Image 1 (cartoon, helix red, strand yellow):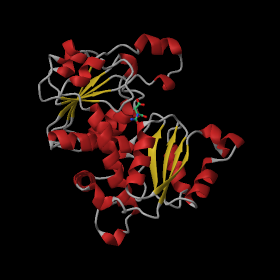
Image 2: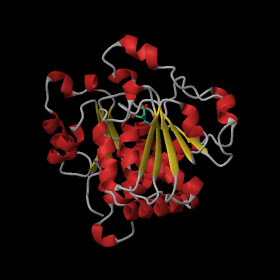
Image 3: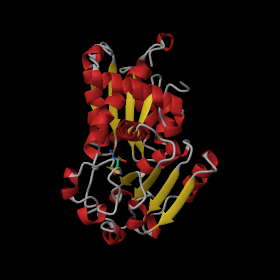
Image 4: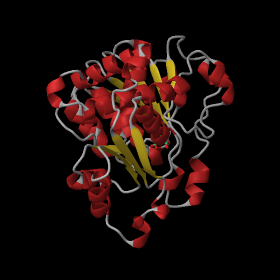
Length: 312
Ligand code: NCD
């Protein structure tokens, strides 16, 4: 594969992702075959922003592979609070661990960190920019439920401006033929123009349709990707409060969707999906969270395997 770091969703080609999906599925089918795969290896998780799924799924993944984990759970509890630079922290931690997973509030922090990292570095989210391992999780979920990517209509709903999971996923999906996107958001939270441009560059034949009405996407989507309004990236509370309940997926609304559509969400959910939806077979967001752990196991195995070994 092209890189030893994983900083952005386009770092891997569709073929690279296929290799990871096959490996993740083999791990799901025979977990005990992989229980010693990373014995003797250490992964460091540096999370300078809150996280439940990304951090814990990475840590669970490494422990299930027989490896160990060292962790900094917040900037406050590390030497960053004493004024240490990111580069110095990464150089130091790279001397302790074989792999680093980092989440940081600043856009581009992962790129900077990778420059200093002597070991593979995985971007666990950098500000509103990228969240490539969520893309890996999301693509693996679509692969498991839909078995193909070509010709899919994907509706993204909610905070398309600040939602980094959307930014990473829409670009990765744009590479498949017949890609069609319905972008559902209030005008203030539209997908940034630079990402719309990138999608068109990646695939000039991809269709992007913007709308403020959730119904426009529900009726035709194969995948509905709901997102939370990203409170922490707003400049003022008033705007957040005004926009936070713009879209709420209810049983009533879901009636308009096809019985084959799947409802995804990177989680955490706030108010945008009614709890009653959880029992609907189309709601796959908790499967998605679980698949994320297996996808990350595959990623760790890949990044830590000797290049000659050829097995993923
Ligand atoms: C996402 C994130 O951190 O960007 N969460 C996650 O990793 N599953 C989505 C979000 O916080 O809304």
